[in-house]
Length: 47
Image: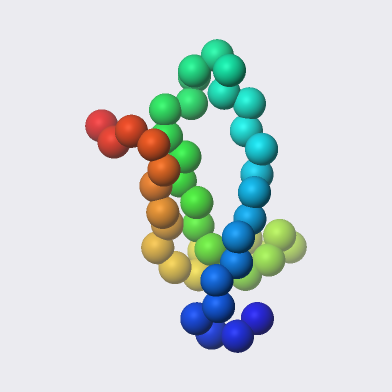
């Protein structure tokens, strides 16, 4: 993947009970090497 490329990933999350208030995502090297490569992005309500 070239530097600066944009990738769209969808991870289905069942939150029908409303227990998930916020999700945080990090770019990682791979699923075999989950070392964070950069800052995370937060989605949802902030406390």
